[in-house]
Structure formats: C-alpha cells, structure tokens
Length: 445
Image: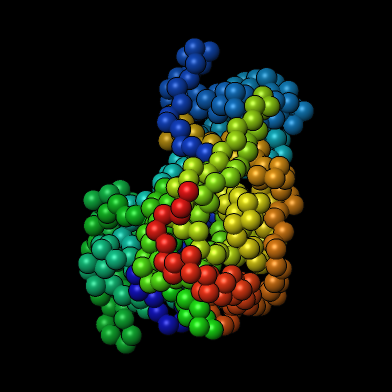
C-alpha cells in the first residue's frame, strides 16, 4: 500500500473503516444469521415492517444484558410497536430506534440495511470495493487518494496516492462528503464503477473499475532503530476478522529482523470482535487469565491464555482515550498479567459486549449481551484503564501526530519514545543474559 508524503485530514477509507463501527466502539461477540420469527409472529406479513420490529423486540427480550430493561415494561414496548400503523419502512425503523433509546444504552441500536452491511463487512475484515483510501484537503476541499490497496482493482488500473477524484459514476465529488464518495465506490462484487480522476496538471482520466472482495488491512508494522535498540512497532487499527492472522505475520516478520522488544500501538482503536481480542491476547500471553464475562443471568465465563504465545520478548502498549472495548480487553490482559508496560492516557472505559444480529429484511440489531472484567476483576466501564506510565498529549499534539502516519513511532511521538525508554533496562538485561536468545520462536512452556 502506497501513501503520499503529506497526508491530508478528514480521512475516509473506502477499503477499511466505515463510520458505523467507529461510532459504536463495540466489542462484538458474534455475527448471527438472519433471525427467524417465532410462532407468535407468524400472523405478520413478511413484507410488513412490523415483522422486523417484532424480530428486534424478541432479540432484545431474550438477549439484553439487563433483565429489567432499564426499569421499562418491555411487554408494553412490543404493544406500542405493533399497534401503530407505519407510513413507510423508515417510519417503523424510527419507532424502533426511539424505543431502544429508552434502554439508555448507546451500544444497543438498530442498523438499517446499509449500516448493517457496512458493519458486517467491517467486522469480517472484508469489503467489496476498488481499494482506495480517500481524504479531503481542508484548504482546497478536493478529495485525494492517500493510499491504494495492493492487488486491488484501483492498483490494477494504475491509480496512485495523490490522485484527485473528480467524478464517481458521473457524480461530481465537489459537494459529496468523503464518506459519501467512499460509499459510491463500494458495491456488489463484480459490479462496475466509473471513476474520473486527475494527476498533477495532466488532463482528467476516466477508468471503469470492477469491484472485488478485498481483505481489509488492519495491522501495520516496521522495525525501528531507537538509541541502538531494535524495536518492533506494530499498529493495530481494529479487531476485525483478519486481525489475528495479520498480527501473526507482523510479529513473525519483526522477529526475523531480530527485534529485541515490541511496542503495540492501540491508540484510537475502537474495538471490534471479541474473538479477535482473545486470539491476539494469546499471541502475546503464554499463560494467565484474559477476560471474564458476566451475562444477564449472572453466569460467569472466564477465558485464559492457552500456551500458544509467539514471543515473550519485552513489550509496551500504547493507549489513549479512544482506545476502547476490545482494545481494553487486550490491554487489561497484558497489564494485569505483568506482560506489558502500558503507556499513554486513560482508555475509553467500555466494558460491555455486543452481539450483531441480522434481521429478515437485511437490517440488523446490535444488542449488549454481557459485561466484562479484566483478569484482576476490575470493572473498567466508564472508568477506563490507567496506564502504568502516563504521557498526556495536547489536542494539537494529537492532531499533528495522527494526521501524518509517518510521525507515529518517531522521535516526534512522545508516547512511543517513553515506551522505548521503559523497555531499555529489560532489553539491556536480555543482552547480557546468555540464556536469552536474541530471537525467539514460540515461547517456552
């Protein structure tokens, strides 16, 4: 994937993250198949929006973590939903959203078909598109390509970082948001989209791209030489369906380059799949508890490492106030088991688990089904995880840092610099210990 030297702001990534999952800050436990209504709903016509309302009501009634439904009469909610006449499907959707808001839970929410499709793609780690990352220049208001996914339709047709997107299927991008342009580029696999772009001062070019199913890159890594130390830097953007395999590849690649320690960057990572957070925890943690969940019936489920860690080299984790949910599960597991030093600012504080359900009309529902606790039994909800080493950044420092990916893990990244400092003594100790090899395979039992 190629990037320009001067990335612009207001990013929207056509082949990676949609706005839906980021706003959810969700730990999604599982993607469920289409829900089948029970016998009590058979009298409702399939094309009647009330059927979908009843599906959604039943799911919340059965799965929601709070059996009191925020002290609401949930049966009365069903009566209200099914007794009304709706002028349109959207009107029915709005009525359902209004009732769900009464739960006072921002993570339990209804998704229209487009939102459900986007979130399903995002958690799966795949999307049908052309492979472009887009950003709007704040000064000129033009939309530019900032990255092109390797082996994508866009790459095959010669698009490059820095190209300006002018038209998508004949629609000017001048008054369309970056997210709107990204959505225009997505579509059914094997369908086509016509794109007009310009490069530098050259005349506009028009290409027809055939959309393809693309794996979303969520892990980036590079070896950093800092004060004579070989630091393996890994940034994880979200916990999607391909995050674990990409994390394995990153760790192994850095170990082949003789990394002496790792810095795992979870800053502004909003979460994702619960299963991915557990799998990735096990890549770093040889033994010990990872997380404990508690459902509506009070049933507790504890999950632990399973002796499959790839490395036991020293590590630090970078977090900030937008590191949430699955990021906090991983951070809590590493911190409570004394596996890593946590550096940065207090995390978001979301200790709730959701399930994602598909409804019969293509819409979906996200339902909070459990509460989770860190290995030490800490409830971090609305509190977050306090770093071992606090390094605060001003709003301006954060904006400057994250607006240019080249600054991450550089001497301009104060949190990264502090993380390396925290690792130095352990690296030095390992260098002088003949029993510690410079490169490890799977951790010893």
